Length: 336
Ligand SMILES: [Zn+2]
Image: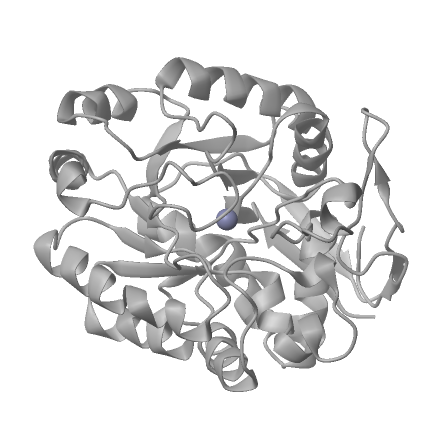
């Protein structure tokens, strides 16, 4: 029987939502990870330190103290001194840039980049990472590539700013990692697993509907080759993003996959099948710790090559349900 022990696994892009979804999603994250970068796109978005601190406390109450929430602020109108103040806050990790209207609750995102230059200058000076949700709204597959000039422009204008292309899914975006030293990327489980055929090749599966959309086989192969080849600039970021079942199984289904409950067993299985188990520790922890000089709680997670059953649904305290990836199926790996 194969087994693997991961040291302090980290999820570098996670949506923990609000209300009863937050309790469930945080508890799930706490069982697998030593920490996670928490996205700020609530309603209203987390833009101030008091709102961020209150959110961090709520997460810790559900996830436990052995889980470190690495908090982000929604980049909007913050000044250089706001960035300085944030940097001094122990919960704060990074600023998240949502170009206007691209994803759930980002309708108030930035469409004029000039407005954020003072904040970006302060971030560069203080070594505050910039996380970018790099895909404009829409189903069109070319949309992610439309961001290539934005990444290039920012990487050139702020050469000492760590710029992270969040959940990249397109082969052309991936190629930018070699072009600029200060560009990094996160990759999700679902973009490593799926293509458009899985989402909509047969019957539409709303539980695989996410932004950025899963793409073509050639994109998935390029991302897989980089991750399984051990690219040191790529970090795992699940983008797990639960919505209540009624909002997913809907004529107006919302984007976001609830991959949280299956992340480490599914990653172990995927890496194992591609002969890359020895690359998993770097992908889920070491790369991020090295890139950010991160200090996170020590937490060892052991996985074994034995089957585990995925629940068909999670009951929320509100009485609603949320459906995980691989709901009601059996995975070949489990957490001990
Ligand atoms: Zn996200």
